[in-house]
Image (cartoon, rainbow, N blue to C red):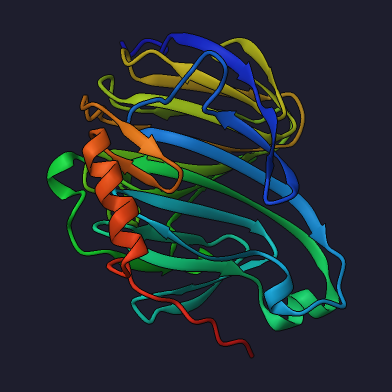
Length: 289
């Protein structure tokens, strides 16, 4: 008989300032530096006012090295451009998957129509670490739309499989280690069991609503951290709720990070800073519609 995955802690998001905007940050937290292999989670929820230009909103060109920055888009859209020549618009329900590898420069903006007309915008960006042996692999980018994301639907429950295998569905996102990455919705009074390998570190974050997780009441913008033992996570919605569940095999390597770089030691961080300054992570000159 499978047993419930023990809950290690429940923490509430902290408000942080990013580029002049206040966003929710469940990870890192005062009590949790990271949950191997997941390093950071930012939850942005707001609106574009309209009457703006593309270069006035979003995040302009900036570098990354040594990990995968991933964005789940829930409302609105995100327009990606990078120094490899990629350009793509990811709409609500889609995922922007990027592996920074040895280095990439990218921007995250919004479509011309969206910034002109305005509207609700909500997304979660999280950072996934990769093993040292892959940190200097070539960078790549993969946009994934909602239609290309497997959906498992049952009574009052929807689960989209972004990465890994879950109930005979395989997510399209490429990962360097074993992971199961899910985004879900559960209507009020709905109940669902989610099986995650016992060896995986796992966390569940609620965007809104309320639910009982393994019998413990959890509220909007709270993150549940599980022990990496047992397999079953039981969720029961007390209000309509949306959530993400990130789980994966721990890498168990030293992490050294600074700003947009995630490596294994300080020397590698210094090398990343130097390489960006001399143009080794590419140059991005944005061209707008």
